[in-house]
Amino acid sequence: MLLTLEEDAFGRVVGRIAHKGAQATVTGTDYSAAVSELREAVESALREGLGECFWHEVAGDYRWLFRREGSVMRTAILWSSGTLTGWEHKFWAECEAQEFESAMRVPQ
Image 1 (tube, rainbow, N blue to C red):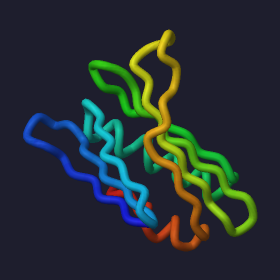
Image 2 (image 1 turned 30 degrees about the vertical axis):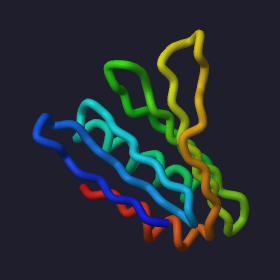
Image 3 (image 1 turned 45 degrees about the vertical axis):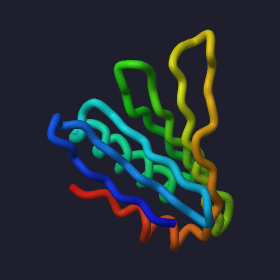
């Protein structure tokens, strides 16, 4: 799994995630808040087996979901532009928890 996080010129976060052919670009309006929430969700998934966070955008929200079962970590990213449209799948991957931990080292 590969994750990159960048701050653009407007203070937004641009995240790119990829694993075995699956890939997505995920954005949020506030770099610091989004990275902090992602870090907490990753730590929760590694520690407790479940983690979740939301990255807010003007037009909707990205939802990051992490679930550990034994040594396997599952990652899903969903998008919603409102309650009528529900959640749309943007990314899904499964890998070893050690690979996940290494890839998801979120900057402080």
